[in-house]
Image (tube, rainbow, N blue to C red; front, top):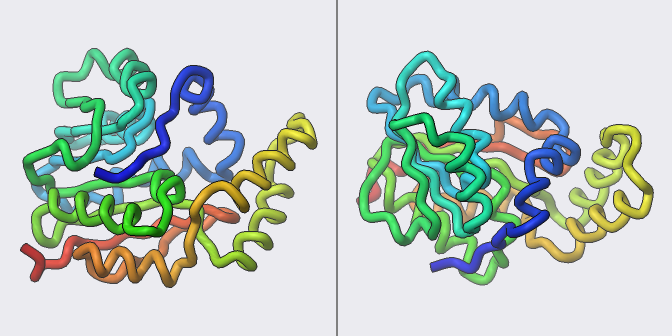
Amino acid sequence: MSKAEIFENERATGYNRFVETWIPGYNYFLDGLPGLFGQVNQKDLLVVGCGTGNEIERFLQAPERWIVTGVDPSPEMIKQAREKLQEYDNVTLIEGFVSDIDRKYNAATLLLVLHFLDDNGSKLDLLKDIADRLVPGAPFVMLDITGSKNQLRQNLEVLRLLLPAGLEQDQIDNRLNRIENELFPVSEERIAELCTAAGFEPPLRFFQSSIYMGWIMKKNSAAF
């Protein structure tokens, strides 16, 4: 079981507002998710780190009927997701970890989670846990804070320029400092190494907005 960042209290309550403020193109990215899985015949999705259910909502609004399982270790996040999604009978929400799940899926997402885990085996363990719960050839989409130290530093300055008006300078400085010095982002090359070691084909980057990169990949067909 990997250590995870657990969002509680005001961090959970303000999550939606936070991500929309700090991630340029966040809603654009979410809106495109169902289309990225258009070739999946059996619409059975695992959403890892589902939070308040933002990406789950997109799949519930898609023309096809998806069966969705969301998992998150934060009781408050799962509570909010349950309140938001209670009318849907095709959603299962689990307060816990991927390692608690004992079945396989035909697609999966991992958005804004990996940078909370140190690259001491924790990142790889989570990716392996996800791969182990996917059928061979299943697509997997990931979004994360990414970059080498130098690249991250430069892209943080780009992010500063893209932030909406009205934020206090101290708030901006504190957040950018936390990203650079308290989280655990790694380079894109390292992301590729981790994903292939976990049992995925090499990831393809299809999205970038300052420090945030998104990839799509498949569970290795030769993996068991």
